[in-house]
Image: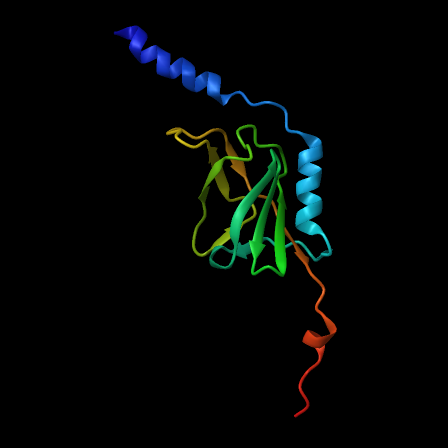
Amino acid sequence: MRALILLPLIAGIAGCSSLPADPSRADRAMAEALAGRSAGAPQRCIDRSTVSGPQIVDDHTLIYTQSGRRVWVNTLASACPSLRTDSVLVVRAFGTQMCENDQFQARQPGELIGGAICRLSTFTPYDKPRREKERATPAG
């Protein structure tokens, strides 16, 4: 009976190890997400209801998308060892915003117990420039 209990435990522990991130894949993902965008001033918080994501780039970079024109990049202060591209994040946020220092756990699909507790950092907005037509105000 003990063996039956230990096998799933051992299998779960073995599944926690991850391969090193492919830097070229992470670089490509960042380049694609930020193409044609300019960085703005970092913000402490973003409104959870206006963003989708995250896109997990690597063990220390998350990208949230806001209405196609803006993306928010969160570069964690330190690497989150359980963060992988297929992770599901469980964020401990209070209210309607995600903020710097909010904690989260990365869980793999089918996993009941999350990995290490990690913290969000500041959110840097990257915006597409407005087209000339959008800048013009109608004559009134």
